Length: 208
Image 1 (cartoon, one colour):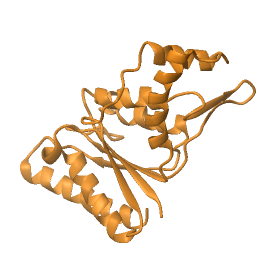
Image 2 (cartoon, helix red, strand yellow):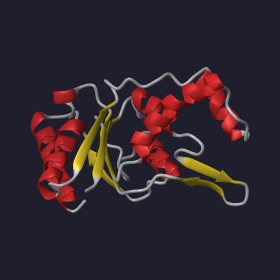
Image 3 (cartoon, rainbow, N blue to C red):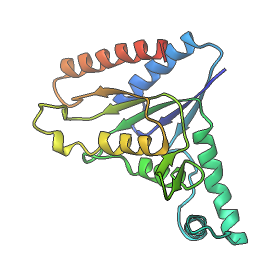
Image 4 (tube, rainbow, N blue to C red):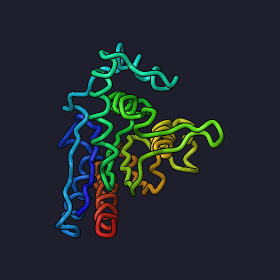
């Protein structure tokens, strides 16, 4: 029995194209894997701690091989709880809209909390950095414009390179990308774009 962690990053909910496709994936996944569980993490309603003060001091103490103080250890416990939920999953699903060519700030907040030494990555002077998280992942991206290769707007896409760069850093290198774009245009065209993405999501879910 596996646990699929679904990380949702849009506040638009029923109006979100990335969520629409993710929900189709989850429905098909549940049908194909009835013994598995889906852990939903809505970043807009999650009580994520601020990463500052004692938490930041604890991180640098760990990076420098020092023991965190009592206050720092208590603060670090909050980080460990968030990171443990993330790294203990067996499979991953992310729905990520594009904001101003990049990622919503709640995604960056989550990344800054879970990307920690000894929790999701390690460093060795001889071999460098290595990720400590494993498992297959599906990343669903939505954007108003089209930024695919040959579109002429590739340089503006700071969404996918940043997100997938982070996934690879923590160890998630087996990633299926599903793009829902463009979502700004004639209603019939957008409907067809979303329908095609939903169909692909269901196909991916059945074999994920």
